[in-house]
View 1 (tube, rainbow, N blue to C red):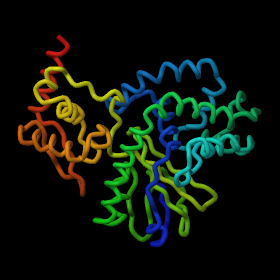
View 2: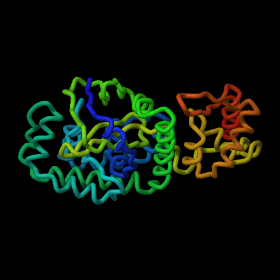
View 3: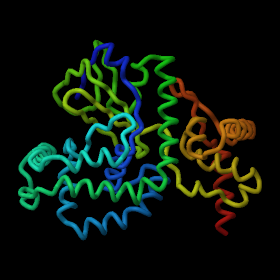
Length: 326
């Protein structure tokens, strides 16, 4: 397993950061995998994959760079500069463009665990190619709905910050993503890979949520800044809003029916507020009425309360969708 050693002062200074660059790189990983974890991701992939694949088909060098850079167990470091607090996307991207070609080559050899393919070995433009691809993903796939993504990420940060206040850092670190665990004795397990431990006492530790649900990584900068990127608890719904069958909207009201449709997967109140854009009071009223009607159930996970549809709720949504399709 890979773990970091950090002292109490480093842990006390740890903070959550929302990064548009991290979100964009997570979307690159999602495009590379080509498989969504939930309907919102699958819808996004349906819209974005054709253009992404056409771009790589027209540029085999960049396609090979993506495969080499993402590797199997290690991401080439120059692709994941550690974002800084409040750093705009163009500024982080500029740091990718500025990477020396020889450094990019060294990082790729590490991610490949071997020599570079001949098509990449003598190229000085790999940092530029990587930056151009990430800029394309940002402009076409992330920036158009960045404000909605940002609300979802900030809701996750709010929930986890409250968890730190109530249960301490160990409670939060244990639940960030599969493979993270507070081991005690100043040791934080960051993944399940057999990497050597790192001493990060005195460094900045940043925790960064992203909306893609299967993708996380670690990065660091000159031994002074370390980041752990993890999937946030709230999922990204269709940017047009989850489709609400007309009969269901007529029965419950469009806003309340939209909440019921979204709860195909468990979500907290704050996550629903972030995803729907509805006020907290409105979401709370919808949840109470849906609970009273037996269409939802709630359960506690750690310090969070998550809502999801009951069998009756599933049947109602399914019946309404079937009637709407007819």
